[in-house]
Image (cartoon, rainbow, N blue to C red; front, side, top):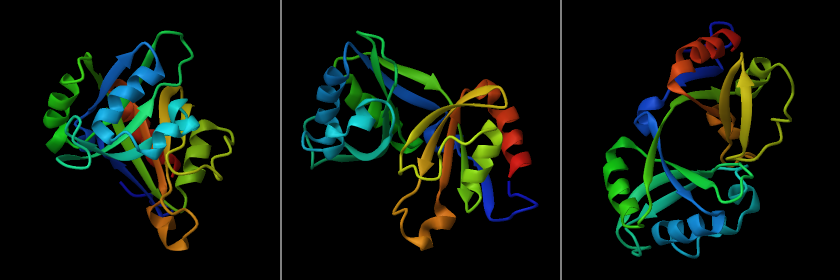
Length: 203
């Protein structure tokens, strides 16, 4: 769908790109999950030292490999994000991958001897120059979204519906990337249709 009043903002239901679900690993601590993920992403991946990522405030784009095989035997790209919960003894990480590599990813995750959970979700994508102002209108106040970096996560309530917004701003200082910048909004499938309509109506 595209905005009638401002064609510089587009809205897309991108749920198919993640097969309508996130793969989730749970652990007793963030560090225990980091140790497991290092076997899929390589032990020297810099984002494992990133405080906002480990604290559930930023998602990262990465490459997955067969267990203990990095940099050989690549599986494909993924998006990783930790829960922001402060509950002691309860940590979890979500893994979003394309449907084409989801089965292989699950096979490799099973080798880590951890339970694999499937969390249903819908993915709504906003792109264009007015994407950020659209999100601001939806939440009804300014969350200081203008200065956020690529991958930043915000837990929001949009029109009464719980959602998580992820900033998409690759090479954000380069003006040519402004049309491709925007937000990915993740929500439960039960509220996705109403949320999609709200987004379109507020573009």
